[in-house]
Length: 358
Image (cartoon, rainbow, N blue to C red):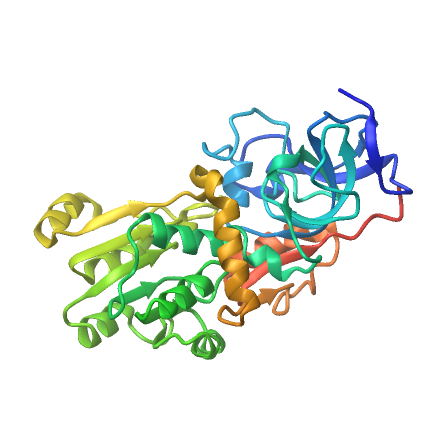
């Protein structure tokens, strides 16, 4: 430990954060909102960020459940892995950053008013705005999944599930930028209209249209690429529509994450190897946290697209939530429930308000 190089004025003695205290796929049961001492000293190569905005992800539940890949530590540990804020404190060895500088971070601890992390993980930003949250895990997943699992080719058909969600919106747009025909699944007519604004060629409200019939009748040769994040019946239906030489990119399976998820007995999985063989097709899993060494490269690429107006960012602070907008740390719980309800359009985020009661 070391003395502090520089710090913001009027830092608190105590701050609040959400901590995983026991492993469970019920986020409310797994975590506690705690008051903790503000660090008086940090390591030479560390910083402390004052979190202003925190991103909500389906995998917040996976983190709370101790799923491998996020952390190997037993509870207690931090939760939330997308934050935007300013640097509040610098260690003595940090030379390339300054107090008050806007930064992004993708380390566990965003669901808190402050977080300490190694300075090397801070991504400098031009300013503090919630839209940059969407360019992190959500957009990076789409960007790097397409890059790492084989680049898209102009003229291909690309099917994006949960297309109006945090990562789906970018999977749609990046595929369009690559010259592809894009099909997107969603659950409401409002989301259909939203997907049209993103350039989606064939939005499908699967609650009104039969997804299997649409794919069979309108895409008789099958779909070339499937960007899949739902799992369960949706995965089965989409996989059955895969074209010869087709490719499935699995970036999630939200239908199976939460404590109240139904057990899915897939008729597809037993014949998966034979189907892949006969179609000369492939299936790829993409887990963003295996590619931490490429975060900055992807973020810069996405920020250029966003800055040039080629990439639209849709943010959702609870516009359709029965509990109202997510304006405090406590609202992280409602925001996660909101995500699993399927009401959101775009990237869900929470504004982290500093407590006045400490």
